[in-house]
Image (cartoon, rainbow, N blue to C red; front, side, top):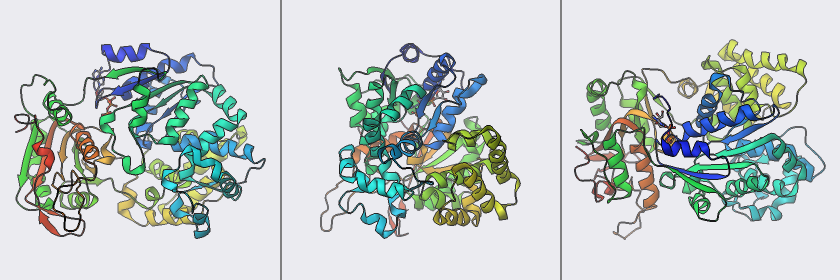
Length: 540
Ligand SMILES: Nc1ncnc2c1ncn2[C@@H]1O[C@H](COP(=O)(O)OP(=O)(O)OP(=O)(O)O)[C@@H](O)[C@H]1O
């Protein structure tokens, strides 16, 4: 990592200590700046107080926490995690009982999809994926009934958190006494409940900082919307708007190409060489990946890349990801999904964290406790808890399930649901699934979807799937031959995210044919994004 010496605009963010919204282009050092801000705040706080730092993924939060904790900064009283885990563990689980005068012994956080038929019927008259804060009034009695039966539905956590904040003085007092500041990253991918929660923190007097980039909004399919960050940026919103506009990550020729994707008139940076390449291979994605096998050693040499893990193969579709993982002749790591990640819940996340812990000696027992323990325990209980977590590293893999269940009972005071235990057993039975939880090895090329690549960086990026129909995705209408895109802007953002993951070189790779989801061999015409104005001369 390059040494962090703040630029003028980064320093302006560091110098401002009140509510703000930071719009930050790719590679502009927002993670670095947020970490510096947190590190400046924490030593000034009394020992019972911290900050809440919300990231979009667990991986991003682990990275932010690592940076904030460097040089002995104490982050114990701070929260690092996703908005769902914050809302569940800091607001809904501790305070929903206040609205019903009762608290169940055990709580399991479940996704709607994993509810029984009777559980699903509870939501018959609402769209569970699009719940807004105003829907809670209608649902409250039903949600409390489910809660008293030990179930919290993941999709309702955001709206419940806002409702509780509005209706529980105890919750407001707790948050005010516990947190001095709230940071939310990737704000362009906020949904309605997260935005409503964020604006309420300001009225609690908790310094609120939103960070994001409209041009990197790529999750509208899960009802996220850049309109919320745009609203914060408007004059009179009550949030100071500061910008980070310098991309420190990518070679200037990559910055030029990426910026021209969004604005064909933008001023270009001076460059000595062009590091964006367009290549087309005869054949399908299979031949395209075989071509990568051929060129990779020379490219690594040319761009001073020592380890394969500094190379990313980014794809739009999971079938291309599977082809890449199969065809690469060097070791690789496919960041796909498995039974634990496909049905996330507090317990699945905990089991995933125990597997990470097992395979990565750098992860400490304390970090697991910090992440998952959200209740007070007596001091003499801690050694028992620690030992049960430690055992998940020491035990044989054949008895990992039992060890994990004991750790879960010690931590949550409740047995894991059978469905989550079954998912863990399925993962343990598959060598490929298990590898997902091991730390990446130096010799492994990383293969993932463009969506999963957000926030990451690689020395060399191979960007695949740049085909007509695929990126931008087109809608097929029987008998209609017009070109209709599903969501052209968001597809463009996805392409922009992919290109801006590259530090030294970005290869845009197509082939004359393409295999679709059903493995049918189709024409592989290049993406319409190749024809955007302003790109001539910016690639070779
Ligand atoms: N002031 C700076 N001087 C030198 N390098 C910097 C500076 N700020 C950031 N960087 C480097 O730029 C790269 C991108 O920084 P960082 O990961 O914090 O960006 P980001 O804004 O979070 O990116 P993205 O939104 O694309 O995920 C990192 O390698 C970081 O070390």
